[in-house]
Length: 48
Image 1 (cartoon, one colour):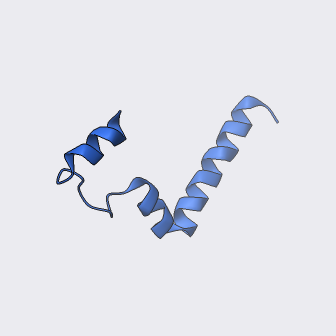
Image 2 (tube, rainbow, N blue to C red):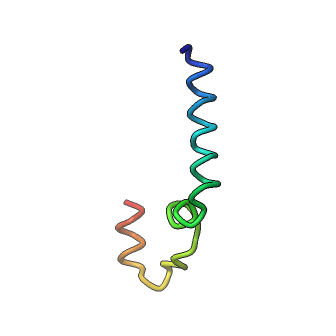
Image 3 (cartoon, one colour):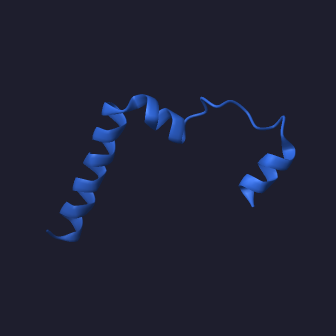
């Protein structure tokens, strides 16, 4: 498998995962946990 087809296969697998496990994807990359601006120390630690 060459680099281009490998890249495309990984991209498709990523999209398949996002569609199959929408709640998990949203938990990982969405904002379902809310805003951390109420917790500045936690936010600063996460961004460092």
